[in-house]
Length: 137
Image (cartoon, rainbow, N blue to C red; front, side, top):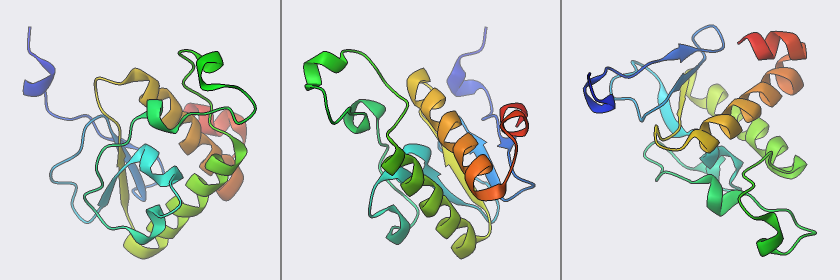
């Protein structure tokens, strides 16, 4: 069996070549600005260029009205402010770069799940897709 490192990265075209997703930081996505998907919920994301350091869900997920210990191993979904910030920042990156490649670490399935929810929210809230269309993407 081949290891994940020897397998070529899988790319998923989510939005007609405008938004692409990869489970690893892609090397060689022609013409695409590359960002860790979860970095787009940060306030300064829209002002930063390529080369973000990976951002882990464990450091971003919080429930404002609960103590940290009460959250336990929960990993999402993010709060409305973070979802709206992601949508805004992704829209800014698309407007600036034309093509955006989002990626999440292969070893972090919780990050994959949260990234999928965030991209689905963008498709529904900003591109007027139905929830069914977003789920099929």
